[in-house]
Amino acid sequence: MIDVCLLGTGGMMPLPNRALTAMMLRYNGSSILVDCGEGTQVSIRQLGWSVKPVDVICFTHFHADHISGLPGFLLTLGNAEKHTPLTIVGPKRLEKVVNALRMIAPELPFPIQFIELNGEEEELSLCGLTVTAFRVQHGVICYGYSFSLERAGRFYVEMARENDVPMKLWSRLQKGETVEEDGRIYTPDMVLGEARKGLKVTYCTDSRPVPSITKNARGSDLFICEGMYGDAELAQKAKDKKHMTFYEAAKIGRDADVKQMWLTHYSPSMVRPEPYMKEVYKIFDRVEPGRDRQEITLKFEEE
Amino acid sequence: MIDVCLLGTGGMMPLPNRALTAMMLRYNGSSILVDCGEGTQVSIRQLGWSVKPVDVICFTHFHADHISGLPGFLLTLGNAEKHTPLTIVGPKRLEKVVNALRMIAPELPFPIQFIELNGEEEELSLCGLTVTAFRVQHGVICYGYSFSLERAGRFYVEMARENDVPMKLWSRLQKGETVEEDGRIYTPDMVLGEARKGLKVTYCTDSRPVPSITKNARGSDLFICEGMYGDAELAQKAKDKKHMTFYEAAKIGRDADVKQMWLTHYSPSMVRPEPYMKEVYKIFDRVEPGRDRQEITLKFEEE
Picture: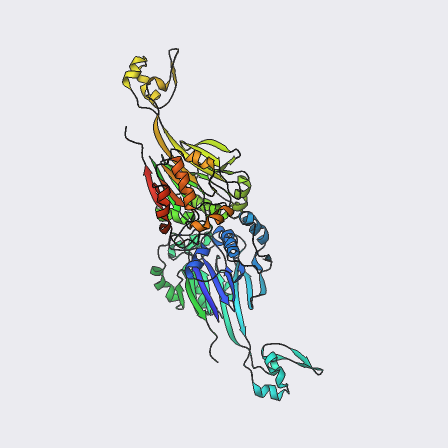
């Protein structure tokens, strides 16, 4: 079970009723924050989620609307008496940028570990999730992120017996351990069926539509994607500013066959996203305009 | 005529319904901002004042709740197509701190001029106002600010005639110019009565109560002062954290004999300031608990 919240839907600058785009994800007692703009901490507080379990912050890129809230957020984490390490993930120069911002947040009661991304695609294991960072195409180096929770196969007593697995090892094998006992090696596949469908959340902002997004969004239960402009006449502006229109975003969702999709990162000039949705639905009908603090709890399919 | 707005009343961290403490002042087409925390630009937008005329930002000190909104604010000024210079005033290390934060706001369409404060008290002339920066006592170097609009004496035709001032010079002398004509020097005091009472706004946060505040607040039409704690039992905490209680602040207002006073910079732990005011009024009855986006227009007294 993963809780996901889209903390805001704005791009460029925070507005009175539209926080900057960021996402928070809760799994198994830990939280991961993706981006932290000016006011992200206020949105978390409005939502009522605790900041203290935030163990990881992933940055898509270093434009101010995605990172300007970091110093205040770090201090608020400190005030919440976080003492466990915080891992910060982001493009290269991460440590340099964070340390510059920490000029106004120098004293924190927890250590910070940095993971600087370099490749086109990197896979990390964080908070029990598989996190895939993938390069997208913006004015500066920018990454999208997929968060996957894998789900092992079902446990079959018959298989365990067929493979002569001692009953005392069943539980450990079921949890994924490999065990050596009396000179024989027992592996999880001796007791488990094929891996079942897990959960996957993909987040991408800011970018032009590029194949890496479609590839990584594939199979997502939730795909959160930027759509800076709803007005089709702003297609050229979207190109110039290295953003997407709603229609470009919807095509990615359709091509990646995601289960559901939320648009976000609206231009401050867009009063409401709804008027554009009729045309968007013609491309893909499982997309909706994201709302500030829109939440969902993703659960494993019954099986 | 000066418009003043207290943009927020919070200290430490921004809350959903309490922006961080900052002040904006409008005079004669220019605006001055004092401090710029996370969300200050949102409060200005809610207020409906334009950011573009902001020609000066004065920083009290470099704690994050007073400066963390700067990168976003600078970018928003740029988006508003400001091209005229911005002057930033603050304690020493100002340029270093601002440049560190500009790591995420590197490209701006206007130049920035820095005025670093060094002394115990410094007088500046900014946007037609006399700005006095005075050292206060906080955990780091911190300044309070007084903004004074001077008002010349009244113009007396009789004086001008008595002093044989040619009529064609009257208007220039009235505006404060000194003029040489036919070998004789004409000064404003030849046509003007004694200087009349001007307008004065004093702003102080964060600090312990120290004499420099009382001295500089004296004669203020509006005195905005921190009061971190309303609960009298938190007096020791106020001392430890280098802040003030409402009662300490009210004593300064009383001793400085200010015309009116607004409290601000409330601790996030204080739900509402009102319950403490009954005791505060016993000390000084021209003080009130500041509210977010509380505005006032200060006008010259009739004369």
